[in-house]
Image 1: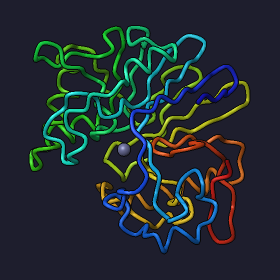
Image 2 (image 1 turned 90 degrees about the horizontal axis):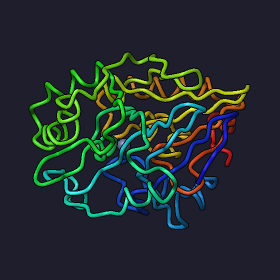
Image 3 (image 1 turned 90 degrees about the vertical axis):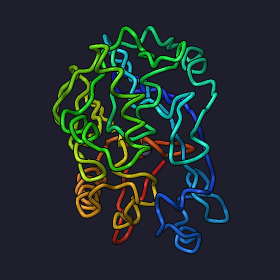
Length: 283
Ligand SMILES: [Zn+2]
């Protein structure tokens, strides 16, 4: 799946897609609440009201950069809280190469935040050692994010993520710690969308008068476009995350900005339009 924004292209490389089982992330999104939001079907929910979600990476190609935004779960990882995320043996790197992006060709890795499903393929296991998957890339991580998760010791699973997917990049000298409004190149810059995590960012793409926004996780699922008050259990500051969703939806509403969702399944991208008292995603 590919989108064009002026001279930039964005390609989606899927690692996992699931229907149902997402209640742990969005407890308010019950079947009874989801079914009346008709526009969620068929891309984002099924006919029973179960949420469809995707874990994918987005490769952003500008005239002179090849950037991978968020690196999914990764293979061989251990100590993950979600049992099925342990010891994955998926074909992600082969799929990435088959789409025209061998890992050596990536020059920039960008993590919107440092949660487990956004940093996994930062590293790969080789002879018992976690090595950078993208050896020729600079890895851009938020300065605030990095400092926050480095100090996180309360939860073993989060410490494991930092140890196997973030620390090895820093130790290899490949990490650039950036501010939340960092400009990567003429066409691509970061937009602070904090709340989900302390240093969370989205990614703005703009070229030849066209514009797109990669959400990151300020919204996990398009149902939060209709219901921005629905918090995710993964939001580190639920009130701030809600304010960010409301501000961003207001900003994006009825504007020609292609919104590309980091966990949106199916069509994955669309435009935010007004829908009565709230909003919907027009795909
Ligand atoms: Zn996520």
